[in-house]
Amino acid sequence: MEKKRLAKFMAAAGIASRRACEEIIFQGRVRVNGSVTLLPQTMVDDNDRIEVDKKPLSGEESKVYYLLNKPLGYLCSSTRKGRQKLVLDLFGKIKRRLFTVGRLDKETTGLLIVTNDGEFANRVIHPSSNIQKEYIAKTGHEITPELLRTISKGAFVEEVFIKPMKVTKVRRGTLKVTVNEGKKREVRRLIEAAGLEVRELKRVRIGNLRMGDLPIGSWRKLTEKEKEQIFA
Image 1: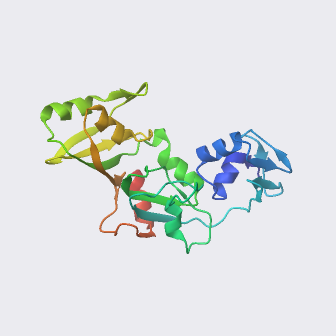
Image 2 (image 1 turned 135 degrees about the vertical axis):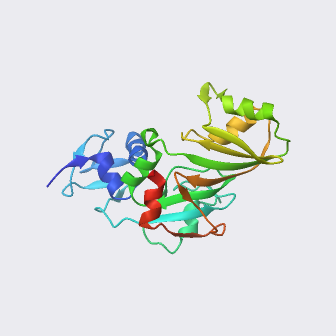
Image 3 (image 1 turned 120 degrees about the vertical axis):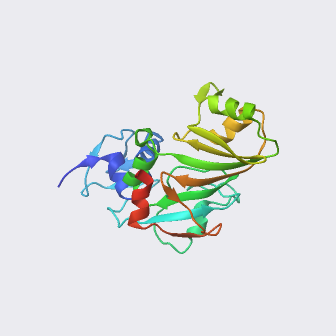
């Protein structure tokens, strides 16, 4: 039986993306045959007893892919603190382990992919894939040519330089921002660095995949064609 790296094995079992699985391992939450391991490269197969957060890991399961129109106020997390609302609460009838492909912050709405395929998720979020993400941002300010130039040049935020691929004015007070990185709150921070207040932020595209008229808070399965559009 072919052995796999522990992080890859966990991703195939639907725990999270491969990168997120590596973080789970580094946090000491994974046991292999009764012993905690901190090495994502540990080689394992179906004969090994693997536990994540003291729960046995089952083998590879059938893969599912969902498109969600994320509502305001929901967290992209598998861990709840207090009375927080989680994106996964919207999938209450789905009796399998799911996770989001990347994250949208609590105040951001729009297109989000939810799956149990860690390899697929890793491919989407990995910088080498260079996948564009498009956002619509509503501000309380008139968008002048000078502001567009300022945002387009990028900015240092918390000692990290972030720069959009494209910024255009949609209408008064509204911007369209395209990025191809996945830095935390990247679009919001770019706009705020230019001195603007972000009143609403919505993701409308990943790659060539758009949400269409899916109602907010609703989800549906992705078609094979739509999965391909992400990477097209």
